[in-house]
Length: 148
Image: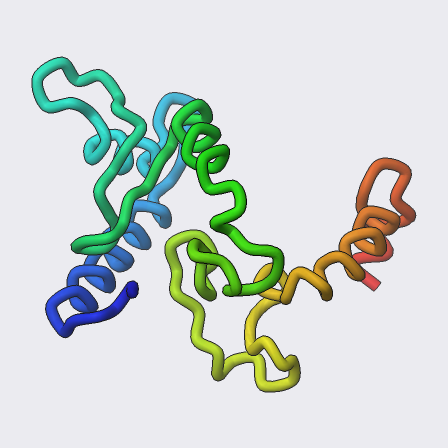
């Protein structure tokens, strides 16, 4: 679905390089280069108003939404299309962290071959309460604990 042709892959990776260059630029109180980069792609050409939609980072079958109302509308329409477990629905997101496609070779020690965010729903349901207990409101962690 995401990398179905030789023409699409270079386009995606070129966008990732462009994004990386922008994201590494300094953010100041007056300027955020990464926000500017997205706005350049999501503004209506004539009015300059933000549409909150960018047809990218891939060449086709790829849309990035940046407005809360736009994202909420799309998610509310997905409903049962998401399925009840990993990839058993009509709509699902593969192993991506933001825009970055993650290789499954980097996590050979877990059956789902992904970072924790890519864990199956059953594993997520098990670990989420533990993370909340450690890091959530009233969590028992500190900067010293993290350093140790």
